[in-house]
Length: 198
Image (cartoon, rainbow, N blue to C red; front, side, top):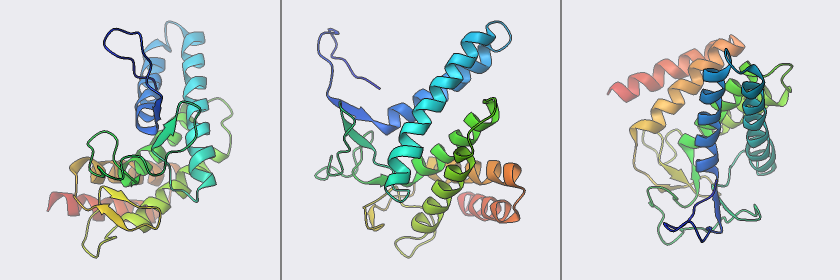
């Protein structure tokens, strides 16, 4: 996604996975809203969501053993050191954002559900991204819960427990349980929800 200055004259050189993630989410919602009245436009929007998911999840995350870079140049080169000096930046934190891994897994499954003849990698990648976030993120600092961010060696950078991260974990586990029928996802959703309630 792109960021312009207030005068709409200068385009930022920064590109972010977070903005693209929410772009996919918005695109899927728009496609759902148009499906009845403009099916061609809805299909085009779903294709756009698939392309974004392919680039970020099937490309960048898969290539980096399911550690999705959050920050990029305008030429889509990853910026792994971006905001190292401000690791808790609320919109562009340094490191891997655990909650986004879960959110992308859920969105990949959403794209799969609304795509005619979806590619097999959508499910495979959703499972791999989810598993990486669950295994690396849960209690990464020795305490229950998911830290906000991890470094490239899976050590916590910002250890704060944010409500939305556990919500995304529960949502992704619930969707994977429905899609795969595997009990382990239901068990994780139950466990993480109970943790969130505490």
